[in-house]
Image (cartoon, rainbow, N blue to C red; front, side):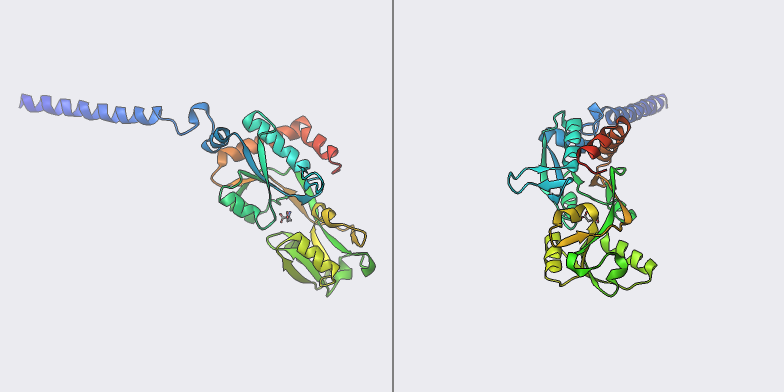
Length: 273
Ligand code: GLU
């Protein structure tokens, strides 16, 4: 009997030891990157040595590729520089990839880019799929028509056709505005902005609608951007839903830039106010 007690006691001790051992193993084995308090996706960018960002290449002052030099520059490229500096300690350590309204989500999904900084409007629906930072800029949906059309406002587009991009917020915004004004408008959807401009040039459509900033990239001698603006478009930096650590770092950086006045300085630098 005594032997049995001893055996039981040692068994209990052994089990307690094993449990404690398990506990300590879990405690002492940090998640990848956690030893420095860095989220794994941030660590991965640091190990790679370059931040990959999806930007616009056809939006003057935001993300625009100079056709002569091939250089991409703008307010959103400057934001990219600040984030590269924050994550990698060097504002030059970034790579950009041109995106459209249609491609930017899939590029985030498949991990080809870490962030999208590309006139990406924050919406409740999009927040289901991606992390968005707090807004860094607010634009509005605008209308571009041919100068010789004589159209001066949305009312002038009653029963006419408006060209919009697929996967953009424009159609919903203009539909709501038209409903409010009690007019009917028709829409034609296109994959890219150059296609919409071509359709406007050939009078297949009567109007090209998207955010004002984007329309400026397509303005020429034959067209005019009307003064009306619809549905404020708040732009945020987007990241993959799973990358919460990266999203927090980005959001903290944007908010630090707001507090320090750096964001306003950039907005002024690019003549956006
Ligand atoms: N900003 C709008 C959106 O996110 C217009 C589309 C675009 O950014 O290309 O839907």
